[in-house]
Image (cartoon, rainbow, N blue to C red; front, side, top):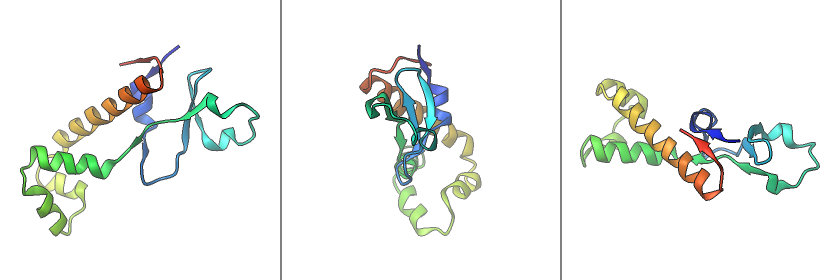
Length: 119
């Protein structure tokens, strides 16, 4: 059995939100927290899926690809991050960076939890 990194990407969770998805180590299926409330199974069977700090990833992108001053300019602006990416014609580049980063977080999570995964 294995889990695909694409499934982990599709079920990504954010650090500033409650954990909603868990992986069932026995079946390698992703479960929503509300489906587990009535289970009388040991908790260790279910582990929370990785969480993504999207704000940190955005900061990394701004610093690495848009220059050192981009981060301070962003915080001074009235635009949200998505609007800034569109206005600067950076959306496609940002999305590739974001996907690559989230996939790396998923790989690391799998490795740390001894979860077999496929690319």
